[in-house]
Image (tube, rainbow, N blue to C red):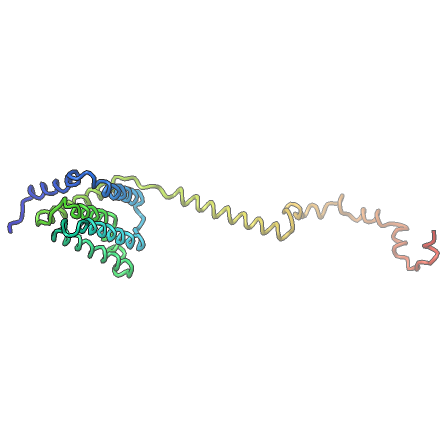
Length: 249
């Protein structure tokens, strides 16, 4: 079999792109996937340092598997009337891919870079759309179609990478500074509460300065002499016991 020319492949790529318009009702199914795909590309395009995560990779595999179940239902909806071997083979192949993503993500079988690449939103949503197109008999299992499917996938991936380069990265300095301010204020509030509770009140009430202790007007030898002088000191120092008659009125 001769390899088809680039013009024939591009024509088949265009036919895949136009396939949903042959049955407009399918947009009720593929529309949410397209919107989610765009949203995820925008998110990772503006948060360039953020990684996918193992749990997200596992969830993507489960989502793809659920789409395949929905596609299988479409094939066997009217018994064997709508069944074709080509559609079943395509859905079975994508099912094995979804199970592979689920198993390897759950077991952490590969490095995170490789796993997050094969379980990223691009492949997951793209093959979900392709599975639905085959399930609704809008695409047929042919070598030209299979080649065009992978060519279209490469074109979309390159387009998204090019699109991400021009997306401005959201600054995380504001969020980090807000977190730091919150931590600093929390520490200050805690320390101030500990200080006041340990002294039983405000710090100003227990603030004794050197000037207040050495002030001659408030605390001096003369004031002591005036308070405890003469007969007062003699009466305090007297050893005379109290008599019974002293308490008569």
